Image (cartoon, rainbow, N blue to C red; front, side, top):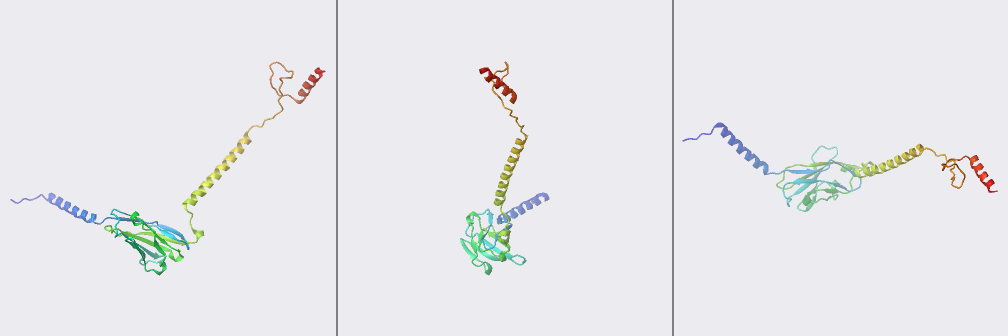
Length: 231
C-alpha cells in the first residue's frame, strides 16, 4: 500500500531540512570582531601607538594573524600592507615610507594586536586598517583608524587635562564665593556703640539697678562726690 503524506506535512519536512543545512553552514564559520579608535592625533616626530583589539569565539591558535595596511590621505586606491604578524613573528611590509619604523606592541593571547609607529611624519597622515584572522574565524572584517600628524601646539587637550583644569577652576570658584559671602555677612552685622559700661558694685546706686550706661558727666559727678565724702 502506498502511503502519501499530506501536502502541508511534506512542505514542513522540506523547511526543517533546509534550516538544518543553513545552520550547519553558518556555524562552520564564526564571526570575529575587530576594534580600533576612529581617529588618532599624533605629534610630529614622536612615537604613536595604533591600538587594535578583537573578539573571537575560538581559542587563539598559532594560525592567528594580523595585517596592518595604510592608505595615504587624499588617495582612493587600495590599501598597502605595512606590517604582518603571525606565530610570534613580525614581518615588515614593502612600503619604504615605514621601513624600520613599525614594531609589534600587542599580545595575541590577550587579543591585543596593536603596533607602534616610530618618528611620526606628516606624510603618515591617512587611514590605517587592522585585519585579524583566527581560524576558523576567517570572516573578513577590518577596522579603520584615521591618523592625523600635527605639531605639538595643535594637539587636542586630553581628558585628563580637561579634568584637572575643571577641578582647579571649581576650587577657585568655591574660594571666591566663600570670601564674598563672608564680606556680605560682615557688612550686614549691626554696629555696636560702646559708650562704656561701669560696674556699680562699689559705687552708690539705686536699689535694683545693676549695670547701665553712664554719661561722662554722671561718672565725673559720682566720683567727685565719692572723693569729697572721704574728706
